[in-house]
Length: 85
Figure 1 (cartoon, rainbow, N blue to C red):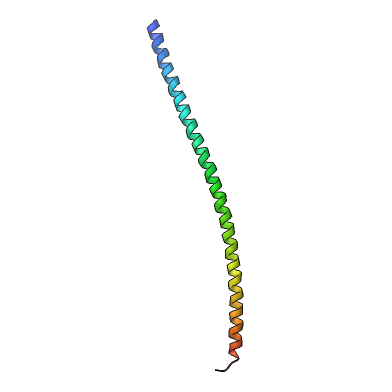
Figure 2 (figure 1 turned 120 degrees about the horizontal axis):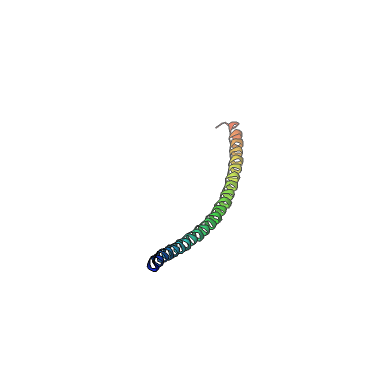
């Protein structure tokens, strides 16, 4: 093995190491981006979940109000049944 061959192999190894370092940096940056996206989506999911609970509660109140109104209308109609027009 000559000095030239050794230097060439060392140069190849050096190139591979630099490529691996760049790949590692890119992978690490992508991982950080994805972690930030996960945090954002979790926050958004919590917000949607809270909004969903609020809307469920509101629908429940509307259903109660509807039932009360229905009962009042039925009572009024029942009282009208006795009238002869």
